[in-house]
Length: 416
Image 1 (cartoon, rainbow, N blue to C red):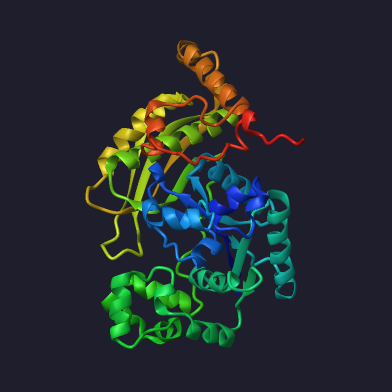
Image 2: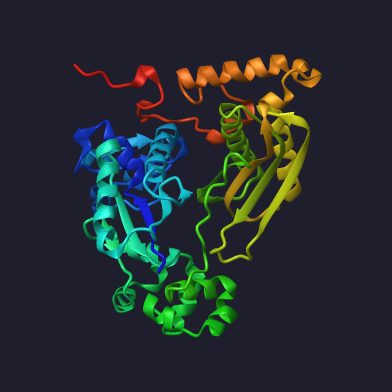
């Protein structure tokens, strides 16, 4: 039997802010969106005060002052760095991992025996807490969808929850409202409730063909997974020797071309840096975008490949080609959930050394090496490109921004 775990970082943005502020443990904390607009992360204490997700700051400002809620502007540099560290730790402990989003990852734990599964997950949870100060929850079951369900209950217990026995799975599915299932949106929830299907167990028992007629193939796959049969395999990162891929799911669906372009440029910058670290060149770049396959609208996914005139590791070359590829596949008025890029047809930098093309590109190469050294020494965003700068999505007001504790030397806390 497959054993798939979902690792979910608890109240991720809040947890990151608390690592270097232990005085905020067990106190209400809220992280605001771009321009300090609305609540995008809340500690459990803030939730208990009635602060809603997405609630504008001006509406709960008085409550925040009354109950001494700690308010933070979104510090994405800090959050991404913590995410990278957590995912690296997880990768060191398991043979296969899919980084699903900035705060979630699926792990293949099939190699772990059932007798040692609880202790393995508990040790993993304790390691992340000990090394990085971040709390996580781990749910384990036989499919991705069931792992999501199990993680729901892990958050309500000691942080580790395992469901592999069918009778136990059915018991907990009976307790779970159908709208809590991964991939069930509002419209489908209303329809299912109208049909008397109000729990995950009732959805599991529904005829797959009927579900497909009413909820498309996506709904059928959900039911299949609730029955313990895999419809969604883990999407493992590609071997860096064959290609370099950078992709992410967006916390909120993206509609504008400008935001997608900025994300793509940011991915290209990171991929090109990896390419140079491995002393490789790429001869092609691919760009892909996907809408939410669990959304109410029809699913759209596309990929565009752009060959380069000559193998390169020069970031601006990839950005130019990547923008053209994105324009070729972008469709307006869609809600995009995931995007990414891949650098393909890799070859060793040594193969091109000494050629007239390489000599002509010497200044570009030196520029890239200088940029990488600056960013490694000071901060990942010390020097970057105009197209990537925009990926901050116009953060013009960050009144409550915390220090960049883990990426800037000047912000490292001093011990007195």
